[in-house]
Image (tube, rainbow, N blue to C red; front, side):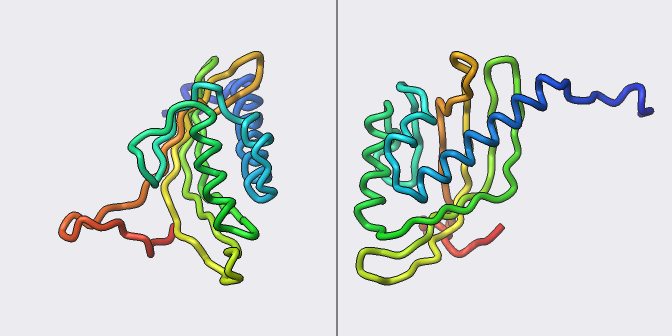
Length: 154
């Protein structure tokens, strides 16, 4: 394939990807600050979330925020690290995937390094803003034991 046949992202696509990355960075900042209202502004009202804790799906922003409320009730300080974020952008729909790790200090005073999870984001462009409409967080499964594998690192 020569250079003339190489598809280059348009300026619009690059700007959209940059906007999505800023939104994900805002989400991480909001998690670290335990700021539920800032988290709310990153998601669509009808977000569907497949998180690591039951039930199988959390429907709507209230359910998503309740998940984070439970996390914040356990943690005194929260950190969130994201690695290898890849984003693919369409006109008004985008998706991304990465590895994420929630860590921090528990209310007991114990520090935890957390575990690495796989995260996938489905986003919609609404009123010129990229919002998360779907997210999924998972851990690999050891099929022989039926247990999640929690000690892997990217």
